[in-house]
Image 1 (cartoon, helix red, strand yellow):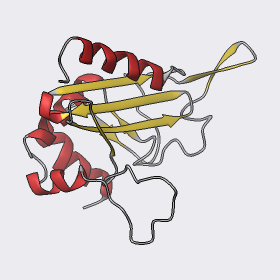
Image 2 (cartoon, rainbow, N blue to C red; image 1 turned 30 degrees about the horizontal axis):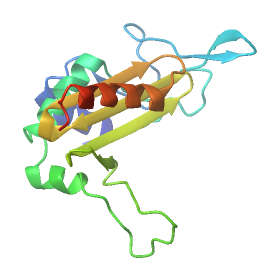
Image 3 (cartoon, helix red, strand yellow; image 1 turned 90 degrees about the horizontal axis):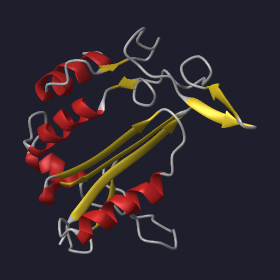
Image 4 (cartoon, helix red, strand yellow; image 1 turned 30 degrees about the vertical axis):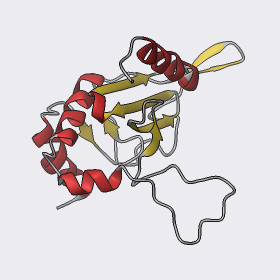
Length: 174
């Protein structure tokens, strides 16, 4: 089964992601935003045709929405398209035997792994391509999902800190 068909059949459909698509070619003709970057005070479109690697299937070729990423998160939590064991494994930091960096690793199987002040695992990933920015953050133990899909630059880290500070203040991460 070709990669895109595999994703559609084994992930999107079981998750209820009926409008999400994956392509390694042209972008969808309708229902999508355009990405913009600010250059010398002027907003310039920088997405599908302007960014040479945009159509890579696992990179800029995944088209979804915040609503459908909620379905994806639910499907992950309920192991609809993979096993609970695989999900648990993907949420563990991997330290290669030849690790030589002067800091501890923080990446699982494609996920960035952190811990809340209360000790719950944070599973996240970011993405930037052309004028698009994404931030996907889950705290599975608390049922929290924070997703941002933007078509221009935004302060990803400071916004994330603001949201998680508010969640802590209101006792949702303790």
